[in-house]
Image (cartoon, rainbow, N blue to C red; front, side):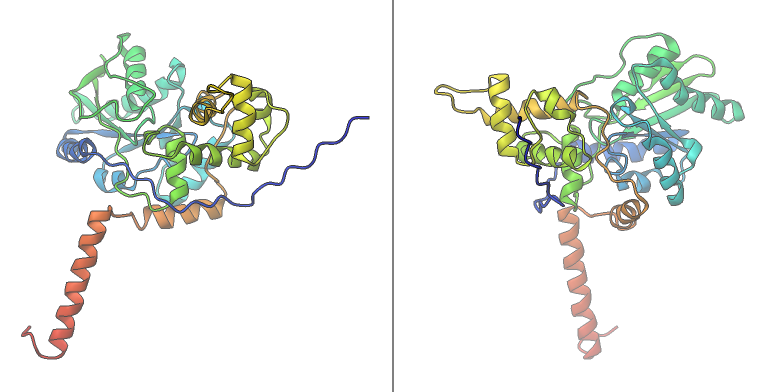
Length: 348
């Protein structure tokens, strides 16, 4: 008689306190270029990642766009559960997002991409005098698929080839591009922009999610931490399909145990049978990013989680570390000045 498998003890929470920051110079330059060109733009298409519908929101864009018309496009919808779409619309509508202005796209499907063109066409046709040429700026965090969306829009709208470089790694687009025509009538043009990260992500778990989906370079994030969080998340949502996908016998909540089992399966062994940890971790992460574990959402979308995210990430948009230091010094100078005035040592 076969023995029963021992139940897997799962963690209740994932603990990690180290922040992961990545804000190279081309991003700061890109923000300035976006701000300079914003006055010539009729519509901003803010591209986000459907796998992380909250974590792929950059508070900087709220400040950058001001009162511009905006269309939120959740790209890579083919890698996220279909069931989250209405939930996302419902929750974000509580925080100033128009439900009809939130789209989910898969850039490999023309019908999906045409949603974006249709929204632009409707707006352009609403006032032909105001919009003789309709201009769209595409913004978003790194690796959410902005350039892929632009190429898909160009393919669908004017049947042309690539207009923007794409890649699986973040940071492919490094400057604001020139205008690219994506529709003849009415004339619609697009401008691609570099992916812009938050200068400082205060929540380490949010940073892990962004890195897991390819928004932060792997050599900056700790691959062992990313893999450990991915394992935690898979177990947490009871997605044990990873066992059959990876060819391992049973679920585990121990990343070291997973690495040892997986390394043997994929032949990631060095001379003497020693496990090649880096190669095994990279295989595990790559398998997830290719969608082989099924459609997954890494963000919690219950009302409490969304409210918490909005208060911490949006209403109190984080400063970069340098900005934080400057603000702290300014506050200290102000307090010193107020004390001096109170003692009549400084004349008002």
